[in-house]
Amino acid sequence: MRIHFKGAILSILVVIFLFFGSHLYTQVSQPEYGWTFKGDVRIPMRDGVELSADMFVPDAEGKFPTILIRTPYDNNRFVQSSYGPYFASRGYVLMVQDVRGRGDSDGVFNPFVNEAEDGFDTHEWIGTQDWSNGKVGSFGGSYQGWTQVYPATLKSKYYTAMVPEVCPPDPFLNFPYQDGALMLAALEWVVLIDGRTMQDMTHVNWEQIYEQLPLIEMDKNTGRDAFFWREWVDHYTWDDYWHKRSYQEKLAKVDMPAIHITGWYDDDQPGCIQNFVAMRKHAESIGKGKHQRLIIGPWPHAFNRSRRLGDFDFGANSLIDINNLYLKWFDYWLKGKDTGILDEAPVKIFIMGDNVWRDEQEWPLARTEYTKYYFHSDGRANSFFGDGKLSTTPPQEEKPDTYVYDPANPVRFIFNPASFQLGSNEDQRPVERRDDVLCYTSDVLREDLEVTGPLKAKLYISSDVTDTDFFVRLVDVLPNGYAMRVNDNICKTRFRNSYRKAEPMAPGNVYELNIDLWATSLVFKKGHRIRVDVCSSAFPKFSRNRNTGEKPGYGTEIKIANQTIYHTAKYSSHIVLPVIPR
Image (cartoon, rainbow, N blue to C red; front, side, top):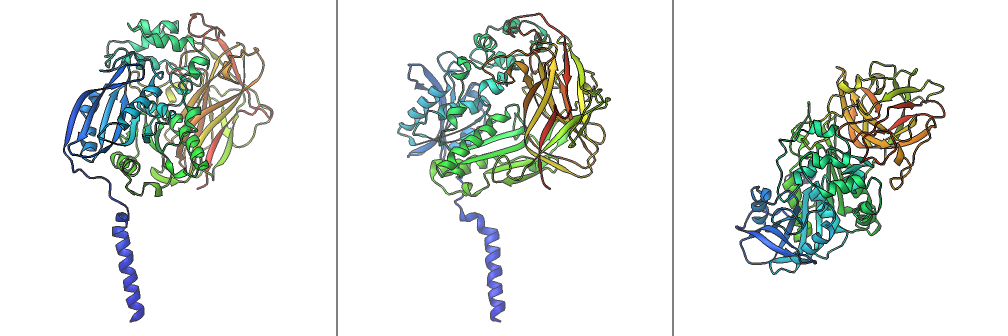
């Protein structure tokens, strides 16, 4: 009887723990306040310019923490949303501020330039108000991620925690340049943001605009006069202009609790990943490694909005309760509630293909087996009808593959213009039919293969021009032939060694190109095949390389380039896949 009694007590304790264990932590803030709206609150900056903010304030006595969103996209959008009442009713002041030169704020909008100081001055102003408890948090995506990380480098004592979502890295690395390649789609953003309010672009014929040269005139061709577009085009290397607009080197030394959120198909994906890795390294060096978190879902730039992406459904589980995540984070850091957030895994990733979330302890994953998949052919890998093969066996002496790159007939990048999403998991077969696209395809997989982590490609190339581009894409080929884009990137040969100095090639010489294809987490399923595409353009995502070696933004002349890809024992072109043991 005594043994049975102890067993019964143990069973009861287990049940209590299972059902009530979550209450070991403080419950997140619940709606208990009324709220008051205050529009066009003027906040002075150090140079006398006043920025405008709309505020939702708890309708009660006392001091409250503040959640700040700084936006170039018109703070009225947030007035019309539910964020203000949601947070104010839970004991937060929600402030949405128009950045300098946008909306109701004074000054002139110049992207990236004023966000650090203006953000810092706003934090300092908030922290000294009689309704403030001295703690400021922030969230927001894309440019609103930039408005968090730039001022974080100045370290206001009031700025306590942030959630930068789909936040780009330094501008020259992703927007408006991506690894030094000008993104023509950046002009869509320039037109949208021109002036103080959001602009209607329905009248713009983007297909026609993209075709026009020189690049420096593209803003005027849309009917706009955007001085910073012409500055961007003019500064085509990483010079002092871009160095002054960079933030990542400084952010890597900042002790700021942050949740970095991005998607496998986010156009700005490397920013959040790079910032998490750098900030966590610094945090661990001072014993605060738990202060950094990374979440990556099966999402495009418009993250956590739909379970579907293109032709694929990732399931209802692919979406997260983002508001609850905000509350757990800000309740802990801004109110001092133990919500259990720091006991969760620092990395949470969605495994596409298996369509499940998985907790991890680091990024990249420590158990990764970096595996080289080499290019092979008998010299005719042109199009998916060709003889290009992909395998883990190194090549010996094989004929190189060649193709002609004509800037007047570039390979198209498949995406919907004016959608502000530069490609997701579209079927690539329409472009893989072209002879100026090399396709290297594996045998049919006999078992599932998980690829989770950073993707890298190494090409050995030559050309008969002094400057040109090479573009590499990883593809998952389904049994029905659907060639699903996984990720890709471009390399400008003039930047093969450094973004700071353009270096011409000697025609005919062999050069090594190392191309960062960002990251993914995808299970290539049994029966699928792995494919790597190589070409020299992805238009109009990126501007065409005219192959002349001239300053890219001003000329109109084009040259045809004859391109060669090598795969031999000495020049073994390949892709490196981060394979995770199953």
